[in-house]
Length: 283
Image (cartoon, rainbow, N blue to C red; front, side, top):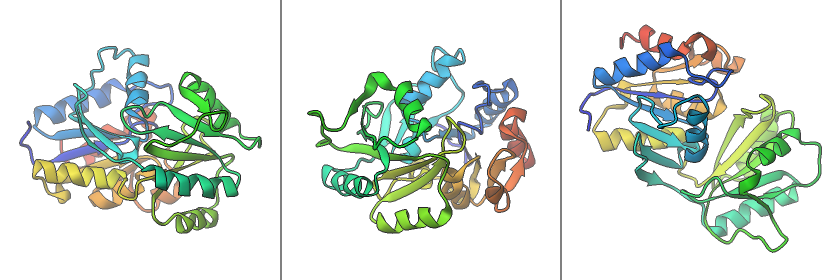
């Protein structure tokens, strides 16, 4: 295991991953240089491990290779060593909590998906109320081989990684705060859809799940200091991680309100990840 005192954590979609679903050669070289310097590296993504590995294969990394040490996936519900895929941390919602969450979402007629516990997160049950929600149906089509409708003999009696509600066109902050208050016993995380870039994904996890909590667990495991953590992100679900690290950057394509809070580097399409490392004097 590495013994370096620094830790570099980056988001994936919209941060390391370009809009054309590739990773710049410059950013890969930066990650390689960090590892040569004994700096621990990790990706913290909202994707499941399955979805992340699928994205790597789509850009030609068929062997799953990427110069990182850890994958924090499903917004911090799981951590695995990379490469190799050994699971070292996971959190799940028990059935009693799932019941409370879906009762709330059913009452509000939200379209949602209940994802099975790790390692079967790609499998999910879904509930639709027939509203105009193209992003919901686009995601359903993307993972149709793993999806089953709630009802019709299918139910969610097992633990789950998360419950995901998709709100077409986005959500205003006042409405979001109401949902967070109503579901205060859980971790409610807002993200912009990586599919249509405008719908809101409201992800509901076990109360101890977030990117920052997963990163904190790794920091303690490796005997590091939080002040030596550098993070780069691009969206609302990175906010807690960027704030926690105290040394956070957002790429230029991040929402305007995040750019007002955190230091800004070039966009995901212009190797903003490498720029953050350079500005921090790590290479």
